[in-house]
Length: 229
Image 1 (cartoon, helix red, strand yellow):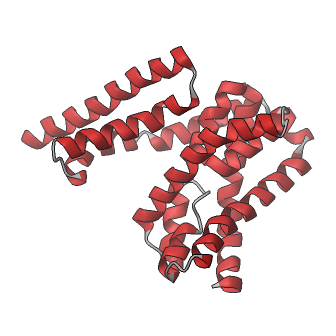
Image 2 (cartoon, rainbow, N blue to C red):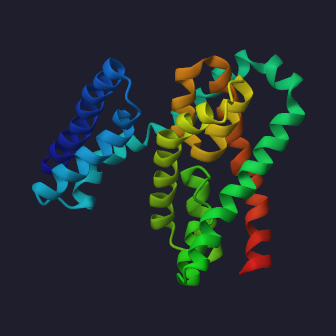
């Protein structure tokens, strides 16, 4: 009963924090107030202040995590609605996702290697721009640290939603395909959530990019490890 109450407390805390911080984001529309980012920071502060271990929090936190699968599946809805757009632009989408996957795989890993990080850390960084479940599996297969790979994925996602909109505006990328592919291939789930703010076409393209990036990365990752590491 004690464990159940703790689980209920932390699941409820996570939900209430997200709903409140999401309302602030909707009100002000500041990128820095993205509810996923602010909720994460708020939870970390609360756990540190009250000296609550990660394992204890996850008694309830895992309930929220269970919703990740249905949320990913739900992305098929905007994809279905924009199927004609996808079919007509298959080639630029394929080229964009492949280019994004290559840059995502090489950027972090080559930088960590350049600055003298251990091989284990380099291989952990390699799949940072791929959705979390796939990234963790890839990191483990390469000899990296799966749990740390999940952290790198989150950092890549947060960076993408904070810097991505500014970069798209600066480079004058205003097409739905360009914005969707850019956000989805660089910031995966978080990027797709951000793409919904632009419109249904951007959301569809981003969900396609996120999914295809995982597929392309699964094939290219071992090749890059073989060539460079």
